[in-house]
Length: 515
Figure 1: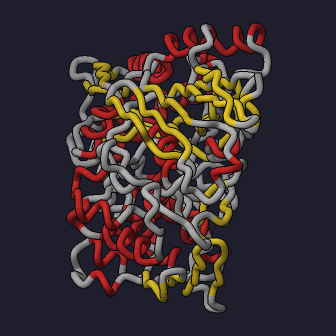
Figure 2: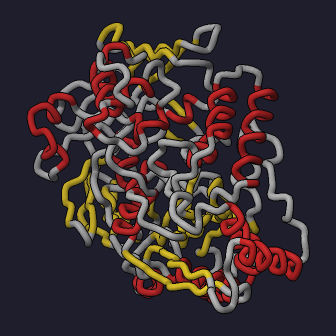
């Protein structure tokens, strides 16, 4: 940890050093997509709502709101005196501009669909409506913002904590265009502001003195380090160079429990580790081939044995425990003995024309990371048992996900961490036309059920429709769920206020350092 020895009154100046994993591709909240980017942009921007230490929604730039009786109209009152880091006021018009920019097809915001509950947003984003004033976001005056929804949406306040709902500074974006996020131009409205950005190395932030709660911040700034080598990160943590690791090599878990007691933090959270399969490419367009690959993965071995941190085997697409949803659907072969699963998988491959003489060959992609590699090697071995030949292929995180979005894959590792507490957030990953549907799964009945579910205001009926959709995707082996995530952090004893939570979001404003 870098500790400045200067005293400001009685406050000790401290920089928090965070191992952040992947390299940030942007600081523009409408252009990012990874948890490593969320950690940065969630410190430097703030939406109408934000997260508390438990990652629950609380008032952010809005001090309060009212919801109409029919659940369609949200009226937000902005806080008095809120400002951008350059001293310009944050107004309701900034939010109107930002939501319109998010939905503008030219922005090409991959994540725009997260805000589709807003009236006319999908039609504007698809180009069907070209008048942006038709979007259900209106400034009543500088301090009052009205958002109208397509239909009542139980998770909407939670969705507004997501970075797609962060405002961007209209006055800077219009003047600087695409260069507005360069470090010399960027203006933000969160607790911190970026002061240095070296791609491939780090992003450095400091307190935004214009933030309404700036006087309550105990951390003076954060250095977010790009480093995908977790063993190297652990060495640097042990040497005192990092205060927080956002991931660790799981084969070191037992050692850390003994030698760094209480510092390795493992907790359940709302996320799914899965393999996407290219549904548009032969032979993976054959549901039997996809099913064979899914059945032959010994999921129960992965969490306890391969990772050593005890992740739970996933046979559903939606993790258990999501709000507004009961037990998720599951594959019908879940409880078969593994020998029977493998025998059935071989039969399915034979039916698709594969044999010892003509083995199925595939490329398995993963992003650089020791744990992903360990899992890929293990699964390749499981597939070998049913006669599948696997070529392992890895790239750095930024490249990996860029290529997946372009559909460059046979089978590829991916993960999804909930953006809001609702099953819809996971099921959307398999919907036609969504950028994060890497395998390009397309099933009109699945899409129709999701649309019907989200138009249904009865919680039980909505959940039943979502579950029916989930079952269709599982029966189609649309993709391969592998395990439900556990968050894996290492936190120095001198960092206080770090709360394990179901979304693994830990904003710096709630943290402090005690020597």
